[in-house]
Every structure is written in structure tokens, then in C-alpha cells.
Length: 364
Length: 198
Image (tube, rainbow over all chains, first blue to last red):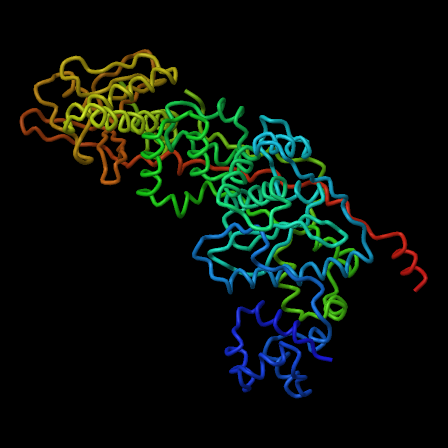
């Protein structure tokens, strides 16, 4: 039995149109549409051809997808110009990852879900989450994704480079009621942290909403700002006069962009509108709005849970032969996916100091 | 008297790095304040007034940073003068990295000559920092080690000059801490039993 829904999922995963796929396998677009709609069972030869062209095992197409994310019901952090095709591709990758988790969870334990929805203000809600993390209000969050996973959020790394889509989140509506945050790969470390914090804000503040309003994104931003740059701490650490060279070391310490710090200083009333505009003008002319100085780069965090589950079940290093057979995915897809996840932490008992700025100079 | 060794640009930049951090902050703040002044007062920007305002903010920044003996030059109100550790620094505005003509000031002419002005009590260095507004609305700084000035030809020489890097680009950061313990995920007991039976 060849699943048309699975074909559609695979096609959308690869960002192909029906016409693209039809050309790839030398069939008509109508034939693809009929297969996807379940009106036409492809011949063994066509099935093989589809699987080969899509670089997926034929067994992938033998049952229906177990998850379906309607793109419009998710909380997306993306540019307005992001195409629907990109949005859908991100959803399909997340669906495949969730199926992997479902497969692995037969054999491994789950982290209890401790994240709760909140009807408080974004700021108070963020403070509660910091408390849940066990981080005091005056300390940076050293590894946000790790902490998010430890409170039971399923963090998915999508093996796809999408320039206009950063992340999305949702609470699953199945029995697991699992909160999910999916992040696209290859985003700068500081941006990635803000994306995760923003999505966490949506999960906490807007869990019940099916469609987000513009103000909901503002609330998620306020949540993310308070989570990563607590107001009380920023009022102490952002010293006046606020200049780019004085604010730059805070980027390293707090793991956020210089732009986010300038914005935070403005939102907290540390700088006035005129200075905020001037600082952003300076960021622009220095080219820092698109590329902040590389010496200040924040390390890219990666989720860990999915890879750890695979290591428990399929060994370290992962036996991809068995993993692929059970998951009904190709080796290349699974390896690509696992590369988006973190390796086990090194065997050390000493934590590095968080976000420490090396003083190259003595003080005056 | 034994003449002091001329320090290298690298060691001088390193030694004066804390000063540059404050100088940059002072200039950035001063440029904003000068701009704000003309905007708020609806006055056409006057570069000499703007430069003076900028200097005042730089001086203020240096004083607040704990530097002693910072003063504006009295005679022409166009420079800053301060001592940092064993180093005498003077800060002037210049269109480029070339030392401006010292004019009739004998003190300034003397400062251009590295081998003059050696107090006996401490090793002694002197530097000139030149600044100018750049085309991005920021400031460019040069550190110069003066060598000589010939009053007859009015030619000044430096041992060397280097642009002063933006302190934000000089920060070397350690990564934030990474997790030291793996996530609390384990094999299910039922799966363990099944695999041991298998």
C-alpha cells in the first residue's frame, strides 16, 4: 500500500511542487495529484522511482504520517515575506522528527513536562520560568535550549536552512499534550537564543490561541527580553552613557545581540528615543544590524534529547543501519538530522564560568 | 643620560587599551550629545562647537573612569592632556594621521620631540592620540609616537603611528557555559528486560 499523504509530506519536506516531482519521475502533475489524493495507486516501478528520486526508502511511503501540523495553527517566528512553501517544509520536518521521538520513546523514559501556561504579564511569566530553570534574576541563562529541554519542552532542530523562518512552537493536542519548539539550523547563536525564548513565551502565554495577533508577538518578545535580559539586572549593568562599545561586552555575558540590548535599554527607559535611534543608526552604518562583530559571536546551542534517545536505543556511535530500518528513513537524512543535535557533554564535573569576558587589560 | 627605548606599537596599544575603551565611549557619547544639542536647539551644526562638546564629554568620561590629571588645554581649548601610569598622553583633533602643526606653542613643539621631557623619577613615555569624525558618524583614532619637530622647516616626524581598533572588536570572549550533565533520559525498565531476554 502506497500512502498518498506520505508522498505529499515527502514532497513538501523537499520543497517540491507537484509539477517539480512529476518532472523528476517523468510523470504528469495530474498523476502526482491523484496519488497524493489516494485516487491512484502507483505501480511498483513508479513507487521505486519516487523513492529513489526523493532519496527515501520505499518503506517510508507504506503508512500514513502520524502527525500533521497545519502551518496556519502554529506559532511562527518568521519574516512576513516567508513563503508558504518554506513554512510547510518546516512543518513537515518537524512531523518526521516527532515520529522519530514516538518510535524512540517506546524504549526510553521521557522528561516530565513542568512548563505551565500563564495568564500573568509577559514579564512575570518570564520570571516564573527563570525560577523554574533555577536561575536567579541577576544571572544570565547559560544554555537556554538545555534548560528548556529539562522542563519538558521537546526541542526539535530542523535540518533545513530557511532564511526567513526562525522557529515555531505549539502544544500538541494528542494525549501527550507536549509543548514543542522547533528551530531552523544555521542561525547566529544570539538570534537562536532569542528565537527559543520568544517561542517559549508563546507556549506560556498563548498556548490556547489558534491564530496569533500582532500584539501576541510583542508579548512573546517582552517575555523573551525579560527571560534573557531581566529588567532589574539590566538597570544595573547597562551603564550610562550607553554607547555601542560599552554595551558590547554585555552581549558576551548575556548571550544576546547588541541590538537586543539597545532595544532593552530603550524599553526600560535607560535611553531616550533620540539616543535609541542614534544607536541603531550606528549599528546600521557599521554593518552590525546584519553581522555583529565575529569576536562577540555567541555559540550556537543545539537540542540534545532526540540524539540522546537515539544513542540509548542504537548505541554510541549510533548504528544508523538499524536506526534507518526502524525509522524508515535514509541514512543521509538521519545523519543530517542528528548533526543538528548536540553530542553528550564532555565528562567533566567543572562548569565553565558563564559568559565570562576575558579581561585582556588591567583596569585604569 | 640613557634615553628610553621607543616602545613598539603593539605593546603601546596593549598598555593603553583601558584608556581606549574609555576614550571610545567618551567620543561615542560626545558625538551623540553634540548632535542632540544642535537638533534640540535647531541650530545649524557648527563643527568647532561640536568638537568642543565632544571633547568635554571625553574629558568627563576619563575623569569618571578614575583617570587623574585630565585637563583641557587652556590656551586653545583644542586638546586633552592626561597622565596614565608612566605615560603622558595628549589628544588632538586632526584631519588625518599627520601631526598638526604645533604653531608657536613651545610646549607643544617640545612634546613632538620624543627625546625631550624626561623626568628623572620614572620611566617615561609620551604619545599623541589624534581623532577625527569618520564618514560613518563615528570616530577614528590614531596612536602616534612622536619623534622630532624641526622649528625651522616645521616638519614633524613620528616613530610610528597606528589606528586604534574599536574596543568592541578587541573583546575576546569565552563561550557561555555548556551543560555538564546529560539530560535525564534513560532506557525504560521494560526495554531493558526485553533486550536482556533477547
